[in-house]
Length: 214
Image 1 (cartoon, rainbow, N blue to C red):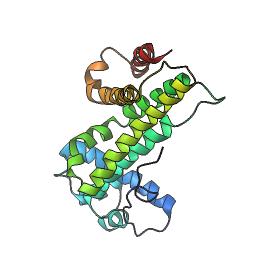
Image 2: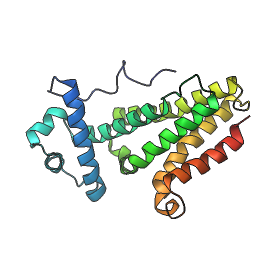
Image 3: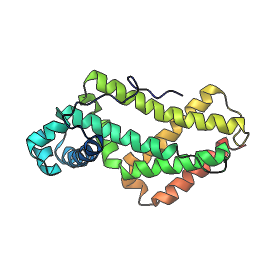
């Protein structure tokens, strides 16, 4: 399963800073500050000067790490997908069966969706503001997250902990899993009246495994 990247990297955002670890830390500060502003004011009404101030930087320092507001929005997308990928690819120990791996991956994914709900809402609202090439990268990484779930489902079918599925049904199931995170993000205002996050996760896993478990 190949990662959908240009070369071997995410789309490169130019920086004048030579220390990669510092770039990672500072860009995460910029992303978190920008999300707050974008949610409050909207992407188009937020200025780079406001992002710099909220990040605790001068405007000159901000431009050492990003070159435009669109770069910041792209970095928000990158942060979401990196967090998701990290959580759903953590394999259980002792060569666990695919069904067990699926449960852990879904739990990790839904927790990221909860933690980054503002980021995810923003991306759905503002991805159209990205340049075409950046938008293409964002959409390809969204497909990559779906493919990770499809690969887990394949392993479960192979080890017979999940029932046999055609390739098309496997991909549809993977898309359905991704939508569970979107549901929590977009409908949390209503769902939280009835479910805690843990209850939501376990109920969805019960429904999911009733359909998939062998």
